[in-house]
Image (cartoon, rainbow, N blue to C red; front, top):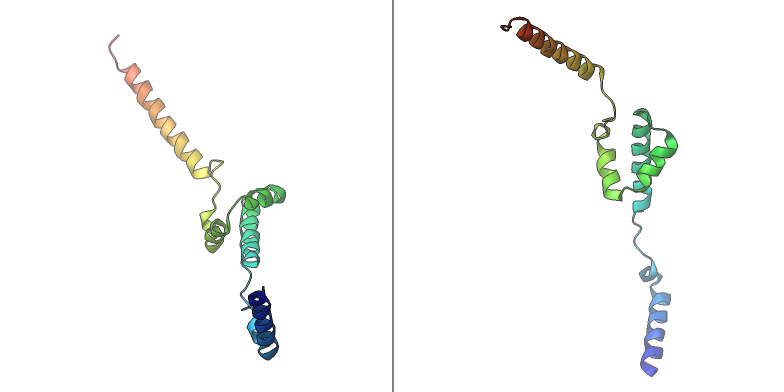
Length: 111
């Protein structure tokens, strides 16, 4: 018991003599960076056509490292839910070529 009492007096004396020992290093909060990254990811999702409440709910499930990765380059978030005009045009051209091939194949076969 006397050892604990002595240790507490030593700590109290050190803090009175050198109060700087009790100050912690000021490190920027990781939460603030994660909030900025989440806001950037939410903004990118909104520009892709996701409503803001769904975008916010989606970023809440990501870890800070995932948010940082996605916020570094906004092109990492892409819309994959729909077809683009060039995919539709390519599909129509390909379908037309297949239809023409089948038409010519059946037209020129011996009956």
